[in-house]
Length: 197
Image 1 (cartoon, helix red, strand yellow):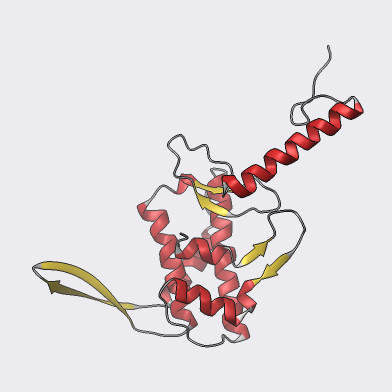
Image 2 (cartoon, one colour; image 1 turned 90 degrees about the horizontal axis):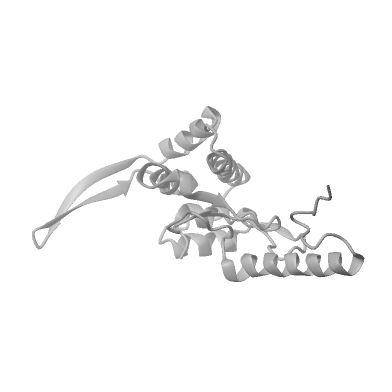
């Protein structure tokens, strides 16, 4: 199951199998409605071109932050500013409720519309940054996929967003490259060419 920020980043679809097919899902109102329904968020109607552009900008800010974190670099303040701008677009009221002697803190958004949706996405990603380990963010090693994921493995060694899809595909590609290299008399491992001394 994807969390809101993760599912949002997948709106820039890339065919992980290598066909080169890409698709901008934020331009598709039917995808947006399904996306919001899957995260129990209200669909505010077909977004304007400006609202779609703001969602794309938010996605780019998040991706730039992830790219910096995955290589251990400092995050660009402009990208944090973009994230904060989205957060400020969705002010909320906090209130406490009681049920059977259990208290819970609930939120009520002050705005509706696409600004609120951007704020929800920004909040989801910000919670990851503040409540989890941002150093566990990864970008899939499949160059045709490049999906972002959170590595929950104990030794932080996960290389692919999905081992059954991208992982197996890359294993098959490496196997075929080794087979082709063997047929051509090239080094047996294309990832680590043999060195003759």
